[in-house]
Image (cartoon, rainbow, N blue to C red):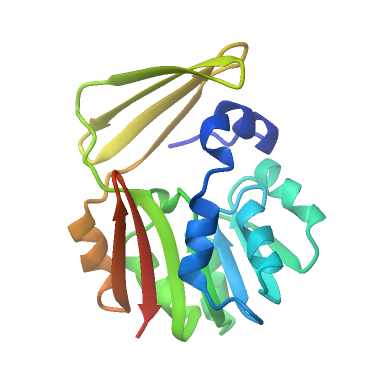
Length: 217
């Protein structure tokens, strides 16, 4: 489970990763974006959705379970916001017969993807539409691992470990309360098994990170 901090708190705690190159990497997998309708799942404050609109998408829908996180995205025109868990939002879109050109999820697919969700994503995409996401591809250790570093004049500590198939993570920054979260470890072969019935799946590995481009059949 996970608590939902405000986007200001989240940005401060995860400063090292917040504006990473992964936004541009994901946008490249979604090309061409001109005139497309896009869904940004677990979109937070809307940075990726904003970049997609700037790259030519005509309209977008941001889905996030946290009202505090999603409220920051209200400043972006042509971006609708739905404060709901991913499954609930996808079911609602499916029931209304909505079809989009692109679906994207940045650094959060391990919170929600399962067999049911994979099918729902395919059903809200047009044939030939693209679902893109990034995730980690190395199984975490069951022994807690601690990483300490300095960034932007602040001290950070990260602690993570695996219990069963759940990764538990604690993020610490000086002067702030810690953020504790947990999400599922999904091996690469399981991603392929979940997605292959609905998509042509391409996995691009860059060290410990995998970028997935899934084209709806």
